[in-house]
Length: 125
Image (cartoon, rainbow, N blue to C red):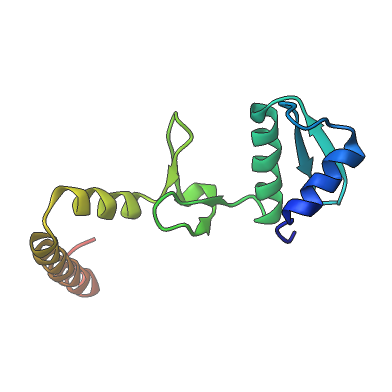
């Protein structure tokens, strides 16, 4: 669904009978119908459900912003969703200076290349 303009939102609130200044929120459903939500929590649940439908049940990584299957993601108690690799990269960038981080990434890449060579020759499983 396209982003709605302020005028469209205002018009839809009037159609639904929601007075301005009311804590009620108007939710625009995928099929075009309007749903009046009593509070932000209810609206958040409907929005999450809408995104799941739009992206075929995939969730969005907090760090790389890509949608992926739930099996490939980590979901925390606080409902943060991320790839393990994205989290590792994010934490590394927070912890180290850019020069040190580049050096560590080069070492990791060399190590990864070495492990793949060992696996190809059957030395490493």
